Amino acid sequence: MKSTDSPGSTAGPAFSDPAGTWNRRFTETGYLFGTAPNGWLAAHAGVWPSGARVLSVADGEGRNSVWLAQRGLQVQAFDIAEQGVAKARRLAAEHGVVVDFAVADCDSYAWPAGGCDGVAAIFIQFADPALRARLFERMVACLKPGGTLVLQGYTPRQLEYRTGGPPLVSHLYTAPMLREAFAGLEIEVLDEYEADLAEGQGHKGRSALIGLVARKRR
Ligand SMILES: C[S@@+](CC[C@H](N)C(=O)[O-])C[C@H]1O[C@@H](n2cnc3c(N)ncnc32)[C@H](O)[C@@H]1O
Image (tube, rainbow, N blue to C red; front, side, top):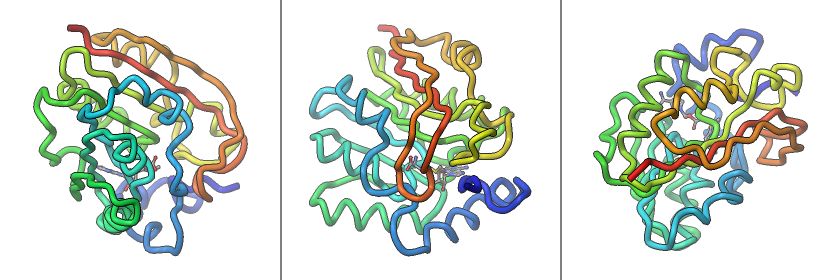
């Protein structure tokens, strides 16, 4: 299956015009990654007690933020694609939950300074190494001491599967890269594994994954 995080045979459009590219994808009927939460997030969201304040980064069509709000968390979420955020708002309304949504690029979003108990960063591999460094720095900065980051991405082996994710090795994660990037956090879980994903049409089939749970020291 062709990668759905970057259209066509070149990586260009998704990265030179991310808002336009993702808006076009999210205009299609249905939810590209489904309406159920990401599996790694669902398995690890227990790190956040009810009432905790959690930020969902590049939240897309809202499957993760809405599910977190249904668990009794106070959720903020942003995404560059207004069409995605519009669908996320509808999903939240359908489930009768409140999420503080914003349409924003990760570089211009008003990140909550020092205020979050948690950050959910699920398949945010739109970022090249320079953007990723800024993005990861902001994610760590917005965690309170004791707050926890839950992150999921693809490893370079995913280039063999092409069942989701960008077709660019520089955007993918390895365990040493994540260990180095989050050296300031206490890494509680870091797993590289393979699984058959069924997260909408966007992330479907055998996948080479990596998941991280890391806590900011008090
Ligand atoms: C693979 S999707 C994942 C969406 C969501 N996290 C999920 O798991 O369903 C990547 C998301 O990143 C968003 N995105 C791409 N570039 C971005 C940027 N510079 N700032 C914020 N969001 C961005 C896209 O609009 C898209 O919703």
